[in-house]
Length: 308
Ligand code: MN
Ligand code: MN
Image: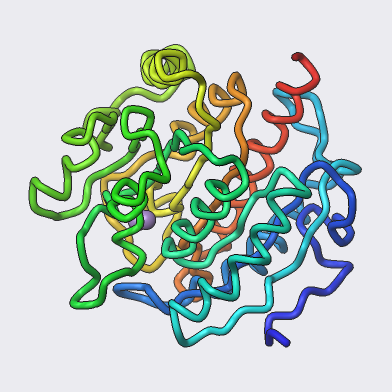
């Protein structure tokens, strides 16, 4: 049994256990691949706790609530010292969950996304489009001498053919790194919006060109299933100090919300929210931001389904 066992009265939005609901969240409390400050293993419980402030969870823009439509599968029982063993144990659990629910995965560090993309590939049999919010490009070809970590998953996903290169979009990138890594996604045919590119652009109208470009890529490539991977360090540390590798000069909460609201126009297949590290958080700013992003994503998808 995991030491991070799920308590049924403390699920995301106080939802009950995942059974037959169309949507579900699951925690992946793994932080063995963090480069700098560990602690993201405590992310899922902090995001759940922050979500409890959302009361009836009726979204003020989408005017829907996930309650009654979402369950919480708890923190998955996974080993916590070997990346390979964690991914091996995660695979069958993820396979079952993606077939049963539209999932939101609560990390955990960003190394959890690669096995999740593999699970979607096994389920759907086709590569995904990805919108990737992050301060870091996560395209490094090795993780400090190891083959895989939380900064290699984009490179590995592209190399494995898990994603449509032209439909891979990065938003918020700004960390140090050599050009080959920083611009790898663009070199492969995808889109990159650095944090600098987006300075001063915050409203839905100002960010519409970003969403239009993503939509045009999806339309041009046969509407591949869309996955959202949100590393909370895309936010400026002023908005999200509780993370392992904070990078000043990042996105605002409003920028990310404008983009997440716009993505509701698309039918997505899943989302993860990773790298929330509560030991470095202040006033729970980071876990509140993460809970709000997950809630906004869920409500956007539910509202989109109703509208469609
Ligand atoms: Mn990342
Ligand atoms: Mn990052």
